[in-house]
Image (tube, rainbow, N blue to C red; front, side):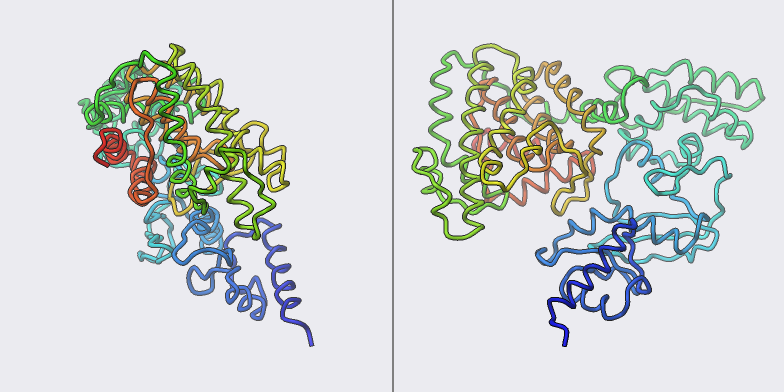
Length: 507
């Protein structure tokens, strides 16, 4: 009789074979019933809908959506290919979001297909798929984006309703900036007789500083005897500066996010006290709050550490080999790494308070903070030494978040742009809020992004005379919800209010 462990190993091997072939949307017929039921029972396979599954993790907590959000786009691509072949595409609005680099998991994915059933299919964790029976765009107007069939940028800009520009100004402006000239748009506008759309797009291009394209659209349409009246579809203020085409999409996106969020931060955050005069006084206060800061920051990340352990780490009375269990061993290593990183951040604060630009200090030192944070785990063999070299080289997914961070390649462009924004930003409050938010939005490292984001926030705070601020673990849910609102809906108000309350002493 085959032992249960060998049976499970055989089922896992069958699942691994599918994954090695790139299969994410697992159909019932892809696995024998015995394998399928065993994998579901042990948590390695999650039912999505009748006859369809996605890989899971047996140690996930109840309600944890991370595995689903990480698989969402590839699952939907596989499912839709199986259902419709090549006869489907995303809606114009969702197509524009993908072209803009926005990989946020939507609550409902809208798909067009000639054989669509005009119905909603519930998926996991409150998401769904709405398939609409509708004609496909012309063959030349369909492109593939990360496995998803989408409208081309020009076709999507013409087909999307005006409300998209109002609801998603960052994404709309990012796609407009992709357009090199008016040719692709004009051929479609003229063929369809889209005078109203032409007026909307001309005004939208003028909004981002592309007057040449705007003028060409208006003049060509009028020459063809179409009435064109410009009407700006954006409800928000124009970009602070013309949006360049010769930069990576993620760089344009970060600049647009900054432009959209900056004013809302200024309206909410207390004005800075000014750079403190006594560097040593600031450093002494930071040292005094270390135990509290370490306890709360590590607890937010799910580590189980006590003030006693943190105090022992600080005094040097630390030996992770004393810990009796693997979990306690990892907690002790995390506590030691936090202590080492904290000392590196104090050195950064010393320079910033002494007068060096805090954005430049953060750019120069944040890699050191990261290395110190994980140096004990490398020494213990729990983290690969290669993981300390540069930014991540694989995708990451944030626990329970619908936000999908940029690809590893995009991170290389995003990080210099992020620090350029911090260096150029004249207002300390904006540096505080956006420094933290944009760092975790990009998520440049495999782990530790939240801790480093809070270090970055406190460097910006102390350099401007604000106090070093601890985010309490008791406020974790509100903290994560505020970051999620900023990442998914571009609503920075909750996060700015959250930090302002803590800095002002009322949080």
